Image (cartoon, rainbow, N blue to C red):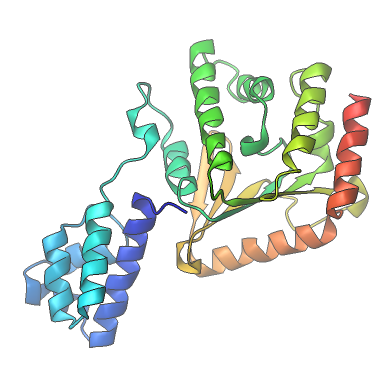
Length: 281
């Protein structure tokens, strides 16, 4: 899997903090030794703002890091400035989507619970257009098409040589909600069935019969990095989204997804229900 700027920046901050604590230095003490403020070093460790690689090299010397550790951290600092494909888009995109694209470009697995719509990575273009038109009632058609173009571009990560594993638990309501009309919905469900044939895509359906459950409040996604420290939760909100990475927040949503997966139908039964609903559309 590619290691992008956000992953590099987050990993760099975690490693700098680990080395400082191993050395037994406070933020103020470590910063004073290399000529940077306590506030600046705190930003380095909490993944905020840019990092100058010479400062990283100086910190590594003070922390008595090994040559291997020092070279690895310098490489992380230099690579944190690399920009993703979406930075070259002519039209601006919402900040929450900007961060989602950054994180998603670097994940090894995504766990999605969808209660309103089919997850974006598995949407057809007509379905995505209908979703955006409904969500942004006063949005110009040009902007709708721009956002749908981004969604379609996002889906290219599914075609990588080593794609992330996409695991979706979809509420039956999302399968039965007529988005864009019966023909759009039928084609969307057929596409969903086709995508389930890919080895790196897992789709389960949470049927109405299961009743109340752990995530009745709304859709969310757990974006998993190469290590647990890089995991992030994304929660859908009106007009944007919320990202959470505190350990207790991550644990709550990871447990919720495990519960939902256990309550959902198995893969074969899920595919059968999707097929049955598509024929009803």
